[in-house]
Image (cartoon, rainbow over all chains, first blue to last red; front, side, top):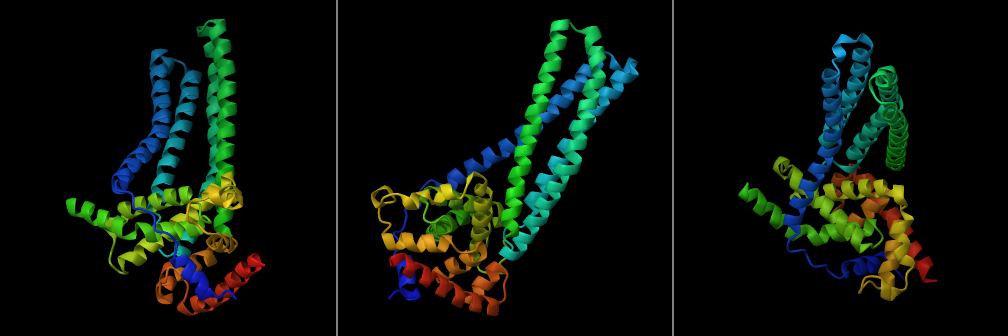
Length: 184
Length: 165
């Protein structure tokens, strides 16, 4: 006849694991890796923005209204994305993990609900703005670049766009599953 | 900074096993995953240590972080299928961690069937925490905890008995 006391005694008899001697040092290392990872994504986006700005001056785009508008659209789309991610990470860090589990859970639910809203509303707008800017640039690319390079730019843009959409889709799916898990 | 490092090292050594055991309960005895979770818990302990306000005991504070981390991380890992973490329970005994006997595996498996909130409550009860402290960690009232513990104890005992048949 098993009673809860038996279960508790089984629990207490579990073999103790050795505490890793270098545990605290490994933790500091892992934190540095995490910080680096968070930085990489925004670094890539910011580099793209800088390349676009550099390109803007290189081709003296300020003399051409269409090219100026196109580049502004692309740069603003990327900047908006960076700013949203920056504030989202900040918000996530502000959620107090030392709160009791009921409060923590409801804070996480409201965080992920906001993230999903961003994904469904803001992200498509950003992608559309970026694509519109790119399409507006195409005639200028055609006039100023060799036909081979022009075809390369056009086809690589389609591949990049597809990869971007797939990546965002995967991210949305992942966050929806977390939200579902938290709401249960 | 030196004293904070020292305090962290002390907390790590004093609480590592308690946190690991709690994580094992959440992962149905998956040692590798539990060690990862335990490391995650202590990362958060380190990040928040300076803001610890001593409104509760340091061990209650660490348990709060452990419960929140385990629940959140396991929900995130559901994206690759929680069943992947439970597969080791199906393996023959010699393939699982050395001293885990069959009864403990049954207990893990039954805890794994509970709802996340109930899992937290019973794991803290098994760890021998007073009900008042469990209420503080989960954010439920003392009375609610008392009633729930009674119910979960019955549910768990019944589940282990059924597995024995």
